[in-house]
Image (cartoon, rainbow, N blue to C red; front, side):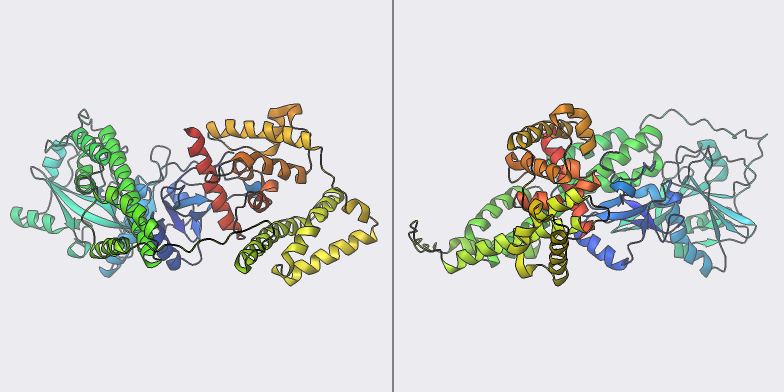
Length: 593
Protein backbone atom coordinates (compact mmCIF):
# COMPACT_ATOMS: atom_id res chain seq x y z
CA UNK A 1 0.00 0.00 0.00
CA UNK A 2 1.31 3.46 -0.83
CA UNK A 3 1.72 6.44 1.48
CA UNK A 4 -1.45 7.41 3.34
CA UNK A 5 -2.48 10.88 2.12
CA UNK A 6 -5.96 10.91 3.70
CA UNK A 7 -6.60 14.02 5.80
CA UNK A 8 -9.09 12.80 8.42
CA UNK A 9 -10.70 15.53 10.51
CA UNK A 10 -13.08 13.46 12.67
CA UNK A 11 -12.55 10.51 15.00
CA UNK A 12 -13.98 8.98 18.17
CA UNK A 13 -12.33 8.63 21.55
CA UNK A 14 -12.10 5.60 23.82
CA UNK A 15 -12.30 2.78 21.29
CA UNK A 16 -13.47 1.78 17.80
CA UNK A 17 -17.10 1.27 18.94
CA UNK A 18 -17.30 4.62 20.75
CA UNK A 19 -19.97 7.24 19.97
CA UNK A 20 -17.93 10.12 21.46
CA UNK A 21 -16.82 12.26 18.48
CA UNK A 22 -13.70 14.40 18.15
CA UNK A 23 -12.52 16.99 15.63
CA UNK A 24 -8.81 17.51 15.05
CA UNK A 25 -7.96 21.24 15.14
CA UNK A 26 -6.30 22.43 11.96
CA UNK A 27 -4.16 25.03 13.74
CA UNK A 28 -0.94 23.87 15.52
CA UNK A 29 -1.56 26.00 18.63
CA UNK A 30 -5.11 24.70 18.92
CA UNK A 31 -3.80 21.16 18.40
CA UNK A 32 -1.48 21.61 21.41
CA UNK A 33 -4.44 22.64 23.58
CA UNK A 34 -6.48 19.74 22.18
CA UNK A 35 -3.78 17.20 23.09
CA UNK A 36 -3.60 18.61 26.62
CA UNK A 37 -7.34 17.96 26.92
CA UNK A 38 -6.83 14.38 25.69
CA UNK A 39 -3.53 13.18 27.22
CA UNK A 40 -4.35 9.50 26.58
CA UNK A 41 -4.45 10.20 22.82
CA UNK A 42 -7.04 7.44 22.37
CA UNK A 43 -8.26 8.42 18.89
CA UNK A 44 -10.00 5.87 16.66
CA UNK A 45 -11.36 5.54 13.13
CA UNK A 46 -14.78 4.79 14.62
CA UNK A 47 -17.14 2.15 13.30
CA UNK A 48 -20.05 4.55 13.84
CA UNK A 49 -18.29 6.92 11.44
CA UNK A 50 -18.10 4.21 8.81
CA UNK A 51 -14.40 3.72 9.57
CA UNK A 52 -12.18 0.66 9.87
CA UNK A 53 -11.90 0.72 13.67
CA UNK A 54 -8.15 1.34 13.56
CA UNK A 55 -6.24 3.61 15.91
CA UNK A 56 -5.41 7.13 14.77
CA UNK A 57 -2.73 9.63 15.64
CA UNK A 58 -2.45 13.35 14.97
CA UNK A 59 -0.36 14.87 12.20
CA UNK A 60 0.97 18.34 12.84
CA UNK A 61 0.82 21.36 10.50
CA UNK A 62 4.22 22.08 8.95
CA UNK A 63 5.87 23.46 5.89
CA UNK A 64 4.79 20.38 3.97
CA UNK A 65 1.34 19.77 5.47
CA UNK A 66 -1.49 22.23 4.91
CA UNK A 67 -3.43 21.54 8.10
CA UNK A 68 -3.24 19.38 11.21
CA UNK A 69 -5.33 16.22 10.93
CA UNK A 70 -5.84 12.64 12.11
CA UNK A 71 -4.03 9.81 10.33
CA UNK A 72 -4.00 6.02 10.66
CA UNK A 73 -1.20 4.49 12.68
CA UNK A 74 0.84 1.94 10.70
CA UNK A 75 0.13 -1.70 11.39
CA UNK A 76 2.40 -4.70 11.08
CA UNK A 77 5.15 -4.13 8.58
CA UNK A 78 4.76 -0.37 8.88
CA UNK A 79 1.90 -0.23 6.36
CA UNK A 80 -1.25 1.85 6.83
CA UNK A 81 -4.50 -0.15 7.14
CA UNK A 82 -6.96 -0.36 4.31
CA UNK A 83 -9.94 1.82 5.23
CA UNK A 84 -13.12 2.69 3.38
CA UNK A 85 -13.75 5.81 5.51
CA UNK A 86 -13.96 8.43 2.79
CA UNK A 87 -16.27 11.13 4.25
CA UNK A 88 -13.62 12.78 6.41
CA UNK A 89 -14.81 16.39 6.64
CA UNK A 90 -16.05 18.33 9.64
CA UNK A 91 -19.67 17.24 9.12
CA UNK A 92 -18.89 13.51 8.96
CA UNK A 93 -19.47 13.07 12.71
CA UNK A 94 -22.52 15.32 13.06
CA UNK A 95 -24.82 12.35 13.72
CA UNK A 96 -22.71 11.56 16.80
CA UNK A 97 -22.76 15.21 17.86
CA UNK A 98 -26.57 14.93 17.95
CA UNK A 99 -26.15 12.78 21.07
CA UNK A 100 -23.37 14.94 22.53
CA UNK A 101 -25.50 18.09 22.17
CA UNK A 102 -28.90 16.76 23.30
CA UNK A 103 -28.17 14.17 26.00
CA UNK A 104 -27.80 16.60 28.92
CA UNK A 105 -30.72 18.74 27.73
CA UNK A 106 -33.08 15.77 27.55
CA UNK A 107 -32.00 14.46 30.95
CA UNK A 108 -32.69 17.86 32.51
CA UNK A 109 -36.30 17.47 31.29
CA UNK A 110 -36.59 14.14 33.06
CA UNK A 111 -36.05 11.86 30.04
CA UNK A 112 -33.74 8.87 29.77
CA UNK A 113 -32.96 8.97 26.04
CA UNK A 114 -31.68 6.02 24.04
CA UNK A 115 -29.85 6.72 20.78
CA UNK A 116 -29.86 4.46 17.74
CA UNK A 117 -27.57 5.18 14.78
CA UNK A 118 -29.28 3.38 11.90
CA UNK A 119 -26.98 1.41 9.59
CA UNK A 120 -28.60 -0.52 6.74
CA UNK A 121 -27.77 -1.25 3.12
CA UNK A 122 -30.23 1.41 2.01
CA UNK A 123 -29.38 3.84 4.84
CA UNK A 124 -25.64 4.53 5.27
CA UNK A 125 -24.37 5.05 8.80
CA UNK A 126 -24.88 8.63 9.90
CA UNK A 127 -28.00 9.23 7.81
CA UNK A 128 -30.64 8.68 10.52
CA UNK A 129 -30.45 9.07 14.29
CA UNK A 130 -33.39 7.82 16.35
CA UNK A 131 -33.76 9.19 19.89
CA UNK A 132 -36.18 7.08 21.95
CA UNK A 133 -38.04 8.78 24.79
CA UNK A 134 -40.04 5.89 26.30
CA UNK A 135 -42.83 5.27 23.74
CA UNK A 136 -42.00 8.42 21.70
CA UNK A 137 -39.23 9.05 19.23
CA UNK A 138 -37.35 11.92 17.63
CA UNK A 139 -35.77 11.14 14.25
CA UNK A 140 -32.89 13.29 12.98
CA UNK A 141 -32.49 13.12 9.19
CA UNK A 142 -28.83 14.02 8.54
CA UNK A 143 -28.37 12.87 4.93
CA UNK A 144 -30.00 14.73 2.04
CA UNK A 145 -29.53 11.64 -0.13
CA UNK A 146 -31.85 9.59 2.12
CA UNK A 147 -35.28 11.29 1.87
CA UNK A 148 -37.67 10.90 4.81
CA UNK A 149 -40.44 8.33 4.58
CA UNK A 150 -43.20 10.60 5.86
CA UNK A 151 -45.80 7.82 5.97
CA UNK A 152 -43.75 5.25 7.87
CA UNK A 153 -45.55 4.18 11.07
CA UNK A 154 -42.33 4.58 13.06
CA UNK A 155 -41.30 7.92 11.52
CA UNK A 156 -41.49 9.74 14.86
CA UNK A 157 -41.03 13.50 15.21
CA UNK A 158 -38.87 14.55 12.20
CA UNK A 159 -35.97 16.98 12.57
CA UNK A 160 -34.35 17.71 9.20
CA UNK A 161 -30.64 18.24 8.68
CA UNK A 162 -28.87 20.36 6.02
CA UNK A 163 -30.24 19.87 2.53
CA UNK A 164 -33.04 17.47 3.56
CA UNK A 165 -36.12 18.71 1.70
CA UNK A 166 -39.81 18.56 2.49
CA UNK A 167 -42.35 18.80 -0.35
CA UNK A 168 -44.14 22.15 -0.40
CA UNK A 169 -47.62 20.60 -0.20
CA UNK A 170 -46.62 18.54 2.82
CA UNK A 171 -45.06 21.57 4.53
CA UNK A 172 -48.30 23.44 3.92
CA UNK A 173 -50.26 20.64 5.58
CA UNK A 174 -47.87 20.36 8.53
CA UNK A 175 -47.43 24.18 8.72
CA UNK A 176 -43.84 23.86 9.93
CA UNK A 177 -40.89 21.50 10.33
CA UNK A 178 -37.95 21.73 12.74
CA UNK A 179 -34.41 21.72 11.38
CA UNK A 180 -30.90 21.23 12.72
CA UNK A 181 -27.40 22.10 11.54
CA UNK A 182 -23.94 22.28 13.08
CA UNK A 183 -21.35 25.03 13.16
CA UNK A 184 -17.69 24.76 14.14
CA UNK A 185 -16.24 26.44 17.20
CA UNK A 186 -12.54 25.59 17.48
CA UNK A 187 -12.46 21.79 17.65
CA UNK A 188 -16.12 21.44 18.64
CA UNK A 189 -19.35 21.20 16.68
CA UNK A 190 -22.23 23.31 17.97
CA UNK A 191 -25.85 22.25 17.37
CA UNK A 192 -28.10 25.00 15.96
CA UNK A 193 -31.88 24.55 15.83
CA UNK A 194 -34.28 26.23 13.44
CA UNK A 195 -37.93 26.07 12.47
CA UNK A 196 -39.05 26.32 8.85
CA UNK A 197 -42.57 27.73 8.51
CA UNK A 198 -44.69 27.42 5.38
CA UNK A 199 -44.63 30.70 3.49
CA UNK A 200 -41.78 32.04 5.64
CA UNK A 201 -38.01 31.58 5.84
CA UNK A 202 -36.32 29.32 8.38
CA UNK A 203 -35.72 31.00 11.72
CA UNK A 204 -32.35 29.81 13.03
CA UNK A 205 -30.22 30.25 16.17
CA UNK A 206 -32.80 28.76 18.51
CA UNK A 207 -31.15 27.67 21.76
CA UNK A 208 -31.92 24.20 23.12
CA UNK A 209 -32.58 25.77 26.51
CA UNK A 210 -35.55 27.61 24.98
CA UNK A 211 -37.12 24.37 23.67
CA UNK A 212 -38.88 21.43 25.28
CA UNK A 213 -40.27 18.02 24.48
CA UNK A 214 -44.04 17.89 24.94
CA UNK A 215 -45.94 15.02 26.54
CA UNK A 216 -46.80 13.61 23.12
CA UNK A 217 -43.12 13.62 22.07
CA UNK A 218 -42.99 16.74 19.90
CA UNK A 219 -40.16 19.27 19.83
CA UNK A 220 -41.58 22.67 20.77
CA UNK A 221 -39.41 25.63 19.82
CA UNK A 222 -40.41 29.27 20.43
CA UNK A 223 -41.51 29.45 16.78
CA UNK A 224 -43.63 26.31 17.15
CA UNK A 225 -45.11 27.71 20.36
CA UNK A 226 -46.09 30.88 18.49
CA UNK A 227 -47.78 28.83 15.75
CA UNK A 228 -49.72 26.77 18.25
CA UNK A 229 -50.84 29.84 20.19
CA UNK A 230 -51.87 31.61 16.99
CA UNK A 231 -53.91 28.66 15.74
CA UNK A 232 -55.10 27.67 19.25
CA UNK A 233 -54.31 24.08 18.49
CA UNK A 234 -51.40 21.73 17.95
CA UNK A 235 -50.32 20.54 14.52
CA UNK A 236 -52.56 18.09 12.78
CA UNK A 237 -51.24 14.53 12.48
CA UNK A 238 -49.63 13.50 9.23
CA UNK A 239 -52.27 12.66 6.56
CA UNK A 240 -53.08 9.07 5.76
CA UNK A 241 -51.46 7.54 2.66
CA UNK A 242 -54.78 7.37 0.83
CA UNK A 243 -55.41 11.09 1.20
CA UNK A 244 -51.92 12.14 0.24
CA UNK A 245 -49.73 9.51 -1.45
CA UNK A 246 -46.39 10.79 -0.22
CA UNK A 247 -44.59 7.48 0.24
CA UNK A 248 -42.01 8.35 -2.39
CA UNK A 249 -42.08 12.11 -2.86
CA UNK A 250 -40.63 13.31 -6.09
CA UNK A 251 -38.31 16.26 -5.57
CA UNK A 252 -38.47 19.05 -8.15
CA UNK A 253 -35.53 19.33 -10.53
CA UNK A 254 -32.39 20.73 -8.91
CA UNK A 255 -31.95 24.14 -10.47
CA UNK A 256 -29.31 25.34 -8.06
CA UNK A 257 -31.77 27.70 -6.34
CA UNK A 258 -33.82 27.57 -3.17
CA UNK A 259 -37.37 28.99 -2.69
CA UNK A 260 -36.06 32.43 -1.77
CA UNK A 261 -34.43 32.63 -5.18
CA UNK A 262 -30.77 32.76 -4.11
CA UNK A 263 -28.52 31.45 -6.86
CA UNK A 264 -26.34 28.77 -5.27
CA UNK A 265 -24.18 28.60 -8.39
CA UNK A 266 -23.56 32.35 -8.13
CA UNK A 267 -22.60 32.01 -4.46
CA UNK A 268 -20.11 29.25 -5.28
CA UNK A 269 -18.66 31.42 -8.05
CA UNK A 270 -18.34 34.40 -5.70
CA UNK A 271 -16.54 32.30 -3.07
CA UNK A 272 -14.08 30.95 -5.64
CA UNK A 273 -13.48 34.41 -7.11
CA UNK A 274 -12.89 35.95 -3.66
CA UNK A 275 -10.32 33.28 -2.81
CA UNK A 276 -8.59 33.86 -6.16
CA UNK A 277 -8.43 37.61 -5.42
CA UNK A 278 -7.19 36.83 -1.89
CA UNK A 279 -9.95 39.04 -0.50
CA UNK A 280 -10.01 37.71 3.06
CA UNK A 281 -12.90 39.83 4.47
CA UNK A 282 -15.06 38.95 1.47
CA UNK A 283 -14.27 35.23 1.81
CA UNK A 284 -15.27 35.29 5.48
CA UNK A 285 -18.56 37.01 4.65
CA UNK A 286 -19.39 34.57 1.85
CA UNK A 287 -18.64 31.56 4.07
CA UNK A 288 -21.24 32.85 6.55
CA UNK A 289 -23.75 33.24 3.70
CA UNK A 290 -23.00 29.69 2.59
CA UNK A 291 -23.79 28.35 6.08
CA UNK A 292 -27.18 30.07 5.95
CA UNK A 293 -28.05 28.67 2.52
CA UNK A 294 -27.00 25.03 3.01
CA UNK A 295 -30.29 24.04 4.62
CA UNK A 296 -32.21 25.30 1.61
CA UNK A 297 -30.54 23.35 -1.18
CA UNK A 298 -29.78 19.73 -1.97
CA UNK A 299 -28.18 17.40 -4.48
CA UNK A 300 -25.30 18.68 -6.65
CA UNK A 301 -25.94 22.28 -5.59
CA UNK A 302 -25.46 21.37 -1.92
CA UNK A 303 -22.29 19.37 -2.65
CA UNK A 304 -20.79 22.20 -4.71
CA UNK A 305 -21.58 24.75 -2.02
CA UNK A 306 -20.16 22.57 0.78
CA UNK A 307 -16.98 21.94 -1.20
CA UNK A 308 -16.48 25.62 -2.06
CA UNK A 309 -17.07 26.71 1.55
CA UNK A 310 -14.78 24.02 2.98
CA UNK A 311 -11.96 24.91 0.57
CA UNK A 312 -12.40 28.58 1.40
CA UNK A 313 -12.15 27.88 5.14
CA UNK A 314 -8.99 25.82 4.65
CA UNK A 315 -7.53 28.71 2.65
CA UNK A 316 -8.46 31.16 5.41
CA UNK A 317 -6.82 28.93 8.03
CA UNK A 318 -3.64 28.70 5.97
CA UNK A 319 -3.59 32.50 5.49
CA UNK A 320 -4.17 33.10 9.19
CA UNK A 321 -1.36 30.70 10.07
CA UNK A 322 0.96 32.36 7.55
CA UNK A 323 0.09 35.76 9.02
CA UNK A 324 0.79 34.66 12.59
CA UNK A 325 4.02 32.87 11.68
CA UNK A 326 5.33 35.86 9.71
CA UNK A 327 4.78 38.36 12.51
CA UNK A 328 6.21 35.95 15.07
CA UNK A 329 9.42 35.71 13.03
CA UNK A 330 9.46 39.49 12.58
CA UNK A 331 9.08 40.02 16.33
CA UNK A 332 11.96 37.60 16.97
CA UNK A 333 14.17 39.32 14.38
CA UNK A 334 13.58 42.67 16.10
CA UNK A 335 14.34 41.17 19.51
CA UNK A 336 17.61 39.72 18.15
CA UNK A 337 18.54 43.00 16.47
CA UNK A 338 18.77 41.36 13.02
CA UNK A 339 18.02 44.32 10.79
CA UNK A 340 18.67 42.52 7.50
CA UNK A 341 16.25 39.75 8.50
CA UNK A 342 13.64 42.26 9.68
CA UNK A 343 13.81 44.11 6.33
CA UNK A 344 13.15 40.89 4.42
CA UNK A 345 10.20 40.01 6.66
CA UNK A 346 8.76 43.54 6.38
CA UNK A 347 8.76 43.21 2.60
CA UNK A 348 6.82 39.95 2.94
CA UNK A 349 4.43 41.55 5.44
CA UNK A 350 3.64 44.39 3.00
CA UNK A 351 2.44 41.85 0.45
CA UNK A 352 0.49 39.85 3.02
CA UNK A 353 -1.36 42.58 4.88
CA UNK A 354 -2.78 44.08 1.69
CA UNK A 355 -5.10 41.06 1.55
CA UNK A 356 -6.14 40.72 5.20
CA UNK A 357 -8.09 42.65 7.79
CA UNK A 358 -6.43 45.61 9.55
CA UNK A 359 -3.44 44.74 11.71
CA UNK A 360 -3.95 44.06 15.39
CA UNK A 361 -2.47 46.46 17.90
CA UNK A 362 0.28 43.95 18.71
CA UNK A 363 1.20 43.55 15.03
CA UNK A 364 1.31 47.33 14.58
CA UNK A 365 3.74 47.59 17.49
CA UNK A 366 5.91 44.89 15.92
CA UNK A 367 6.01 46.75 12.59
CA UNK A 368 6.86 50.03 14.33
CA UNK A 369 9.68 48.35 16.27
CA UNK A 370 11.03 46.86 13.03
CA UNK A 371 11.12 50.27 11.31
CA UNK A 372 12.83 51.71 14.38
CA UNK A 373 15.47 49.00 14.18
CA UNK A 374 16.06 49.71 10.48
CA UNK A 375 16.43 53.44 11.21
CA UNK A 376 19.50 52.84 13.34
CA UNK A 377 22.88 53.50 11.70
CA UNK A 378 24.47 50.23 10.59
CA UNK A 379 27.21 48.85 12.79
CA UNK A 380 30.34 48.16 10.74
CA UNK A 381 31.55 44.68 11.55
CA UNK A 382 35.08 44.18 12.76
CA UNK A 383 37.46 42.97 10.07
CA UNK A 384 37.76 39.23 9.96
CA UNK A 385 41.14 37.85 11.08
CA UNK A 386 43.48 36.77 8.32
CA UNK A 387 43.72 33.02 8.33
CA UNK A 388 46.79 31.37 6.86
CA UNK A 389 47.22 27.65 6.29
CA UNK A 390 49.36 27.57 9.43
CA UNK A 391 47.18 29.83 11.60
CA UNK A 392 45.45 27.96 14.41
CA UNK A 393 41.66 28.00 14.55
CA UNK A 394 39.98 30.14 17.20
CA UNK A 395 38.70 28.38 20.29
CA UNK A 396 35.06 28.98 19.29
CA UNK A 397 35.44 27.59 15.78
CA UNK A 398 37.31 24.54 17.09
CA UNK A 399 34.63 23.84 19.67
CA UNK A 400 31.85 24.23 17.11
CA UNK A 401 33.57 21.83 14.73
CA UNK A 402 34.18 19.32 17.52
CA UNK A 403 30.56 19.49 18.64
CA UNK A 404 29.34 19.05 15.09
CA UNK A 405 31.61 16.03 14.59
CA UNK A 406 30.48 14.45 17.85
CA UNK A 407 26.84 15.15 17.10
CA UNK A 408 27.02 13.39 13.74
CA UNK A 409 29.01 10.54 15.26
CA UNK A 410 26.46 10.22 18.07
CA UNK A 411 23.56 10.12 15.60
CA UNK A 412 25.19 7.44 13.48
CA UNK A 413 26.33 5.42 16.51
CA UNK A 414 22.81 5.42 17.98
CA UNK A 415 21.43 4.17 14.66
CA UNK A 416 23.99 1.35 14.45
CA UNK A 417 23.45 0.37 18.10
CA UNK A 418 19.71 0.13 17.52
CA UNK A 419 20.28 -2.18 14.58
CA UNK A 420 22.72 -4.36 16.57
CA UNK A 421 20.12 -4.82 19.32
CA UNK A 422 17.65 -6.36 16.86
CA UNK A 423 16.95 -10.05 17.42
CA UNK A 424 17.94 -12.64 14.82
CA UNK A 425 20.58 -10.42 13.19
CA UNK A 426 22.72 -12.47 10.73
CA UNK A 427 26.36 -12.89 11.77
CA UNK A 428 27.64 -11.33 8.55
CA UNK A 429 25.54 -8.20 9.04
CA UNK A 430 26.54 -7.98 12.72
CA UNK A 431 30.21 -7.98 11.76
CA UNK A 432 29.65 -5.25 9.18
CA UNK A 433 27.76 -3.11 11.67
CA UNK A 434 30.45 -3.50 14.32
CA UNK A 435 33.06 -2.44 11.78
CA UNK A 436 31.11 0.76 11.14
CA UNK A 437 30.32 1.31 14.81
CA UNK A 438 33.82 1.17 16.29
CA UNK A 439 35.15 4.53 14.99
CA UNK A 440 31.91 6.49 15.43
CA UNK A 441 31.41 5.17 18.99
CA UNK A 442 34.93 6.37 19.85
CA UNK A 443 34.18 9.79 18.30
CA UNK A 444 30.85 10.10 20.17
CA UNK A 445 32.54 9.26 23.49
CA UNK A 446 30.53 10.11 26.59
CA UNK A 447 27.70 11.51 24.47
CA UNK A 448 26.55 7.89 24.38
CA UNK A 449 24.68 6.60 27.41
CA UNK A 450 26.31 4.24 29.90
CA UNK A 451 24.21 1.39 28.56
CA UNK A 452 25.19 2.12 24.95
CA UNK A 453 28.92 2.19 25.80
CA UNK A 454 28.62 -1.04 27.82
CA UNK A 455 26.81 -2.82 24.98
CA UNK A 456 29.45 -1.73 22.46
CA UNK A 457 32.25 -3.11 24.65
CA UNK A 458 30.38 -6.39 25.18
CA UNK A 459 29.78 -6.84 21.45
CA UNK A 460 33.45 -6.23 20.65
CA UNK A 461 34.61 -8.67 23.35
CA UNK A 462 32.19 -11.31 22.10
CA UNK A 463 33.49 -10.83 18.56
CA UNK A 464 37.09 -11.27 19.74
CA UNK A 465 36.21 -14.52 21.52
CA UNK A 466 34.67 -15.85 18.33
CA UNK A 467 37.95 -15.12 16.52
CA UNK A 468 36.31 -12.80 14.04
CA UNK A 469 38.48 -9.83 14.88
CA UNK A 470 40.33 -9.79 11.52
CA UNK A 471 37.04 -9.70 9.65
CA UNK A 472 35.77 -6.85 11.83
CA UNK A 473 38.53 -4.57 10.61
CA UNK A 474 38.09 -5.41 6.96
CA UNK A 475 35.73 -3.10 5.07
CA UNK A 476 33.51 -5.59 3.28
CA UNK A 477 31.93 -3.24 0.75
CA UNK A 478 31.18 -3.79 -2.91
CA UNK A 479 33.49 -2.12 -5.39
CA UNK A 480 32.90 1.63 -5.64
CA UNK A 481 31.87 1.36 -9.30
CA UNK A 482 29.15 -1.15 -8.43
CA UNK A 483 27.81 1.04 -5.63
CA UNK A 484 27.84 4.16 -7.80
CA UNK A 485 26.09 2.33 -10.63
CA UNK A 486 23.40 0.97 -8.29
CA UNK A 487 22.89 4.42 -6.73
CA UNK A 488 22.43 5.98 -10.16
CA UNK A 489 19.83 3.38 -11.12
CA UNK A 490 17.97 3.73 -7.81
CA UNK A 491 17.95 7.53 -8.07
CA UNK A 492 16.33 7.30 -11.50
CA UNK A 493 13.70 4.87 -10.21
CA UNK A 494 12.90 7.09 -7.22
CA UNK A 495 12.57 10.18 -9.43
CA UNK A 496 10.07 8.26 -11.56
CA UNK A 497 8.14 7.20 -8.43
CA UNK A 498 8.11 10.81 -7.19
CA UNK A 499 6.61 12.04 -10.47
CA UNK A 500 3.96 9.31 -10.21
CA UNK A 501 3.25 10.36 -6.57
CA UNK A 502 3.92 6.94 -5.04
CA UNK A 503 6.28 5.29 -2.58
CA UNK A 504 8.16 2.04 -3.07
CA UNK A 505 10.19 -0.64 -1.24
CA UNK A 506 13.66 -2.06 -1.83
CA UNK A 507 12.15 -5.33 -3.04
CA UNK A 508 10.08 -3.44 -5.62
CA UNK A 509 13.21 -1.59 -6.72
CA UNK A 510 15.02 -4.92 -7.23
CA UNK A 511 12.13 -6.21 -9.34
CA UNK A 512 11.98 -2.96 -11.33
CA UNK A 513 15.72 -2.57 -11.97
CA UNK A 514 16.72 -6.21 -12.38
CA UNK A 515 20.45 -6.71 -12.89
CA UNK A 516 21.08 -2.97 -12.41
CA UNK A 517 20.43 -3.52 -8.70
CA UNK A 518 22.06 -6.77 -7.47
CA UNK A 519 21.21 -8.32 -4.12
CA UNK A 520 22.83 -6.32 -1.29
CA UNK A 521 23.13 -6.48 2.48
CA UNK A 522 21.29 -3.91 4.56
CA UNK A 523 24.53 -1.97 5.05
CA UNK A 524 25.05 -1.78 1.27
CA UNK A 525 21.46 -0.63 0.75
CA UNK A 526 21.94 2.20 3.23
CA UNK A 527 25.18 3.14 1.44
CA UNK A 528 23.35 3.27 -1.89
CA UNK A 529 20.51 5.42 -0.50
CA UNK A 530 23.05 7.83 0.97
CA UNK A 531 24.69 8.17 -2.46
CA UNK A 532 21.25 8.68 -4.07
CA UNK A 533 20.74 11.98 -2.26
CA UNK A 534 24.24 13.40 -2.59
CA UNK A 535 22.96 15.46 -5.54
CA UNK A 536 19.73 16.49 -3.78
CA UNK A 537 19.67 20.26 -3.05
CA UNK A 538 19.91 21.14 0.65
CA UNK A 539 16.41 22.69 0.71
CA UNK A 540 14.75 19.61 -0.83
CA UNK A 541 13.52 16.51 0.99
CA UNK A 542 15.45 13.27 0.47
CA UNK A 543 14.38 10.95 -2.34
CA UNK A 544 15.31 8.11 0.00
CA UNK A 545 12.20 8.93 2.06
CA UNK A 546 10.09 7.24 -0.67
CA UNK A 547 11.70 3.93 0.34
CA UNK A 548 11.95 4.64 4.06
CA UNK A 549 8.20 5.42 4.34
CA UNK A 550 7.10 1.91 3.34
CA UNK A 551 10.15 -0.31 4.01
CA UNK A 552 10.29 -1.05 7.79
CA UNK A 553 13.79 -2.57 7.63
CA UNK A 554 15.29 0.53 6.02
CA UNK A 555 13.23 2.91 8.14
CA UNK A 556 15.33 1.91 11.17
CA UNK A 557 18.33 3.53 9.44
CA UNK A 558 16.76 6.80 8.38
CA UNK A 559 18.70 8.76 11.00
CA UNK A 560 21.94 7.45 9.51
CA UNK A 561 20.82 8.37 5.97
CA UNK A 562 19.84 11.85 7.13
CA UNK A 563 23.05 12.32 9.13
CA UNK A 564 25.12 11.59 6.02
CA UNK A 565 23.44 14.62 4.40
CA UNK A 566 24.13 16.76 7.52
CA UNK A 567 20.48 16.50 8.58
CA UNK A 568 19.14 15.59 12.01
CA UNK A 569 16.20 13.30 12.70
CA UNK A 570 14.26 12.91 15.97
CA UNK A 571 14.85 9.95 18.25
CA UNK A 572 11.16 9.53 19.09
CA UNK A 573 9.51 7.03 16.73
CA UNK A 574 6.24 8.97 16.36
CA UNK A 575 8.08 12.21 15.66
CA UNK A 576 10.36 10.41 13.21
CA UNK A 577 7.31 9.04 11.38
CA UNK A 578 5.91 12.58 11.13
CA UNK A 579 9.20 13.79 9.62
CA UNK A 580 9.27 10.94 7.10
CA UNK A 581 5.63 11.53 6.12
CA UNK A 582 6.31 15.24 5.66
CA UNK A 583 9.42 14.47 3.56
CA UNK A 584 7.38 12.20 1.30
CA UNK A 585 4.81 14.96 0.77
CA UNK A 586 7.53 17.47 -0.06
CA UNK A 587 9.14 15.07 -2.54
CA UNK A 588 5.74 14.59 -4.20
CA UNK A 589 5.21 18.35 -4.34
CA UNK A 590 8.70 19.04 -5.75
CA UNK A 591 8.64 16.40 -8.48
CA UNK A 592 5.01 16.99 -9.47
CA UNK A 593 6.22 20.28 -10.93
